[in-house]
Length: 142
Image (cartoon, rainbow, N blue to C red; front, side, top):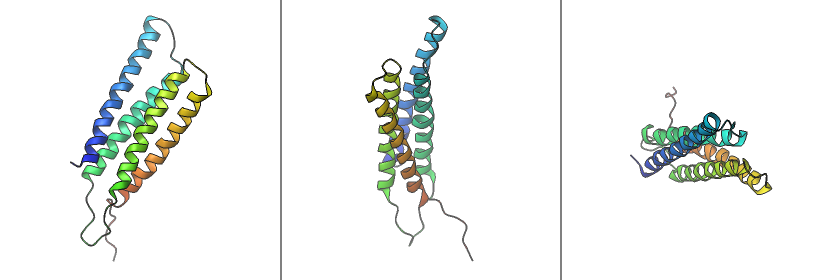
């Protein structure tokens, strides 16, 4: 397994732990204190699990399992996977921090951090698709 795949999968596990912890916190608040969770907490929880965990697992596994290009084909561009990793990781972290903080403070800085984090997630996914593009081969023509 390549280092980038290991990094994606280890980060996915960390985001899973954070998402589950936030989910437990919201559950305790709802069931034991009678306080419904803020929409920002629900959004942070969702993005930690779906983007942070699921998408990182998919990209890490795909970069590991998809075939390499055949001999004579253009070489892989591993920097695409690195950029995808950092954009997704930093974007998901920023978005989660911004949304959790926004649940208790309406400061413009938290909203900006949330939006910037979401933009980084989108850019990271684009680079993730680019990293996988050279590994996916269609049927031979002719």
